[in-house]
Image (cartoon, rainbow, N blue to C red):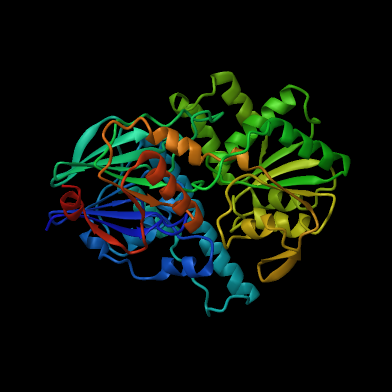
Length: 461
């Protein structure tokens, strides 16, 4: 039967990560993410899973972001009953994120049916809150550095990856091979998170390429953020920040805490309008060893914003007529409370839309970043007259140079490297750099591609 890897998502795109390792009849799925962005990608979420879920023996998560974990409720609903391994922090975050994802999908389906703008009658959620709750019974916390068999002949080790709380590289040992999945690699000098762990090498490497064709700017992020807030305040405007609830919202709050403490911005109100991000923020105090902040700075980050939990409080923010900062989900403006703020604030030139990270193709965030005159929200075309600012340096992903710097010290050079989790240009750029600068055997993974690792061994002999 041999050993194979199938790329069921996260190949040719930056979302939907799913990588299936098969070894002598055992099947382990690394990540189980949602496709996001272009409609053609989102439709994949509704397709039948390529393998019967009952035949998957275990799932391992690199981290909790929905493009890596968000398909789990559908997989479990459709028959997967095995363990889901992840770090303790990832297990905690998954519960928060999947509850929120399921609730949003149910709410959006209900809203679409009530307003009549869906082409499907009736509109249905991909999965429900009840489906998400079933997932949590199968979560199994797994400590980084620990090794254990998770299926017959397949052994697991997790390594810290930086990026967000709980993020890990997944190392699977099968058939005498060491197969390493990078997950999303963090940055060596991230203000919040520790650097990715140095790795001695692997026989097969699956590496992300989100920023594989880019270098993060070396601008003073705090200064740029301060200038945006000050000039918006002078216009009596509001800065609205679509933000990922895990990682990005906390980094923004930490920077805003610093700016306020040092008098670099006015003492204007800051709102965190995301119950999910609010819950996530408290975890930074529990998992103190996984980030760089001392106790004082962590408490300052948690206190700088007013947490908005109820729908009524959120609606009152839409009536803001004085300077403020509103951080709300989601990071690429694909759903959540930020859509209501964009509807109310984007048409007014005194306001600012601050995009705080990567915007996948086909998302509203990418459309806004491209300079579009309007975006469609809840069936309406909303004009974009607000100032639009992109802060790419806030990314929690390693850029191309940082990925290469992580790869260069490998003493055990992979027999083959697969580049995944990137738009085609980014993935191909990283592929070429790995080939030309390191001299490694490397290729871009293709969607639904199935590779025999035994054949790779024969090619290398």
